Image 1 (cartoon, one colour):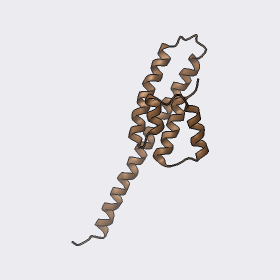
Image 2 (image 1 turned 180 degrees about the vertical axis):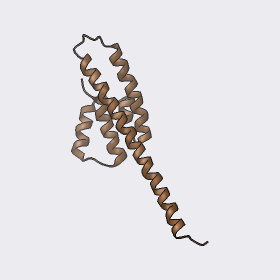
Image 3 (image 1 turned 120 degrees about the vertical axis):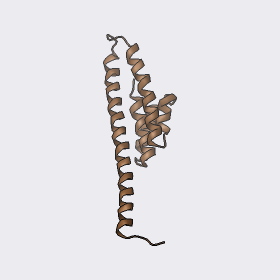
Image 4 (image 1 turned 45 degrees about the vertical axis):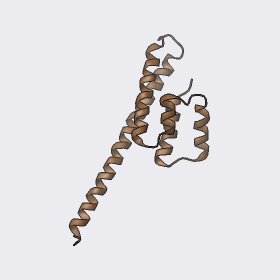
Length: 123
């Protein structure tokens, strides 16, 4: 069992942020080989934070269902619960990234307004 959600999220973030080297990308892609479908594929191929968040939400629903369907005495149960915890942590990190990005956009708007207030342009 592997953390496909985390690897797909890493690939999606590399796409969205334009970061990461080719070896990191290849490693993540190899981890996901044979599992690129549904929300996992959507996250891995995401090109925006909103798209990434949407697929992450769907992946969380799938993972929660998998945890709920697994018997507590199953040897994989604790790992599944840990995986769910980490994916929820990743969701909060994506939310923080989105909020920080929105704050930067708002700050640039304020800077633009301040510039025009300080140096009015006559038209």
